[in-house]
Image (cartoon, rainbow, N blue to C red):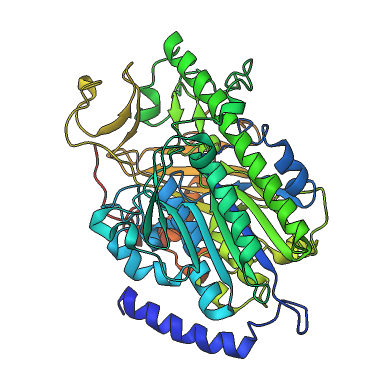
Length: 540
């Protein structure tokens, strides 16, 4: 059955389920209006390097009034694949968005036809009667002429204010319900984070009061070009990028792309990344203002107590870790771990939860508020609804691992900055340190159980290079233990990775290696190719 036909079958099933399960009521209520949901999504905001530090108001208004998840991960450390996972509840190998290009299915016509009609916001509107509002960065190639331009409005959005292509702060174009709205460089009229705040407040002021709403506000901050609002340009003048345990050190025993970084970094590289770090924090101060305005407006309208507010990022970031200047894309904690804060009805204040969560779960949480509709079970994260945990139920089975996967990008010709490396690399800096390559293609099992805090990764290269880290003993991932870890654990992790790379729906939620229900048959390892279920990739 083709994906398109599967989608039609799913839609028909959902229609029946929405009627049978009573989408008109919230879980545990009778005749009351369904809760509303606000999702604030930042761009490239880390959590490992202090990315939440500038957001004092956000911490007070969301984290201190609700719950913070200290182990929240993205299934791919890159904008477009990660955002597609948020919207669909699927791993990249199932939604097929593998990078930030049209060729990588980022807002392509294929994405628009096969995945977009069945995103969670579209289903909230069509099945549950929600008003839906989007403002900000959608997918990196949204607005491309080859994919319908800004006249394309994805199905399911009642109000659509989407940025054309990638993050900017000035001189950009918005699609306002399919019509171009161009902005210049006047701070009071054009600074994008503030424009998004004003649009959001207007929506709350003039929306219908008889229907619940879903809002997704996707800020440019703290993505490059890191242009802060004028009032914040002098903030954090004495702040530098953290000199933590893996800053400016050689990544020994790691994949060649990490080993090629020059250690120690040049003074100019360090000065550049310190400046970038400060500006990233400066841009986040406007996000902090947005959160404050949004919460105050919800409170003024009497909506705050019936609204769930989620705050997260599409991926992490690094600034000098393993001597890589600035970017994301890598398999390490600083790139794959993100903030996740939630407040809302029934959530007790000042909670911190250490359970392993991923952004493929987010859509399930929205539907979890609507009587745990069966739709949840058809996504890769759908069986794991956070709602009971948010409300304090600790007697639940939860996952112990998540899949991380990334398909590397490169150029067919040699980078003029780094001719000695030959073709296949990209995102190279003047001192010939490259952040990506075709064979920077990897998949990992990130495990967090009562007995293990482990990461197991394999690369799709000629070596099938393996990296393994025990994060209990080695939180900065300095030592690759692939050659010293117990062979039985290595084999089990290899098999678990193969299973997750071919999983879909419920099979993505089977017991992990260290769960009581895990079953391992070594004979099955020989019937699977490690990368048999990956999308076609290129090796350097």
